[in-house]
Image (cartoon, rainbow, N blue to C red; front, top):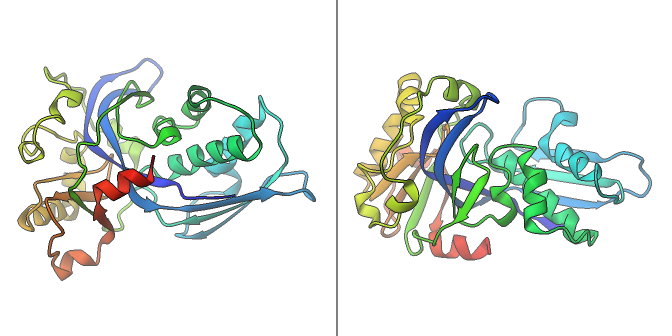
Length: 279
């Protein structure tokens, strides 16, 4: 079976509280985009272990600790299925605020469920995914959602960006999510992001904020410069995604992106077609 785990962007990201379990409470809207990895899995009848190979973008860390194998092991705790030979081709950059690893994990849970007719519902899969990472449950449905708690409490939202054009730029900087959280202080707001995203997109600029930008921009001013350049290119809204380092711009139509920015381009396209692929 061949599946294509999609990346996501965050429409705003607010740190609303520090939890007793060491995590933070957040508020964000996660939105799927067209950038994706490729994940192939077949039964490994001759093997007594799951085998994972990885190509594409080089990943750090031991392959045995990859979240894809972690997802398979988590599912094996309650369900029986053959050992697998898995190949992951990485296109989504790591440490980029796009949820690439989480998407890989969610996608393989869905693929195994379908491939071996395990008959697990979406809520059951999300429960397993939540144990793998805070944003992993989002990638079970992979549809626009308002996320609270650690990011695992999801409420569907309408496809507010249908018809707009997305441009994603990544400068190749890996930002530590752990360090980004440690440098952010919780702030409460009166209006929720779920309410704000329903207003016209061109009014988002001063209302929808990613709390990580303040400290990440101080450490990496080149990321801030990319955001400013996207606005100069005509973006109606631009933001860093997650804890960075990817910055996206939302345009009314396909823009002319300066060559100095194009070297960072990792994805572009119309949101309507992107959303339709994730349904």
